Image (cartoon, rainbow, N blue to C red; front, side, top):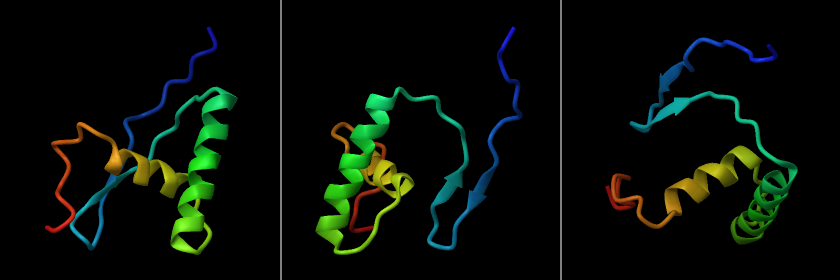
Length: 74
């Protein structure tokens, strides 16, 4: 058996009232390439370097149907 057993990811409260959860994902290279493209678009828009983590977070926040997410004005 080649499965890894890891404890539940730790959750950390952030000063801005949000939370951070660290986890490991197994993604196909095609998905990693798409995330790289998203990071490139976001970096061009923001005029600064952007990590893949930041690109994923931005993508999750801006996804349609995220009605549970906190509105931007709050």
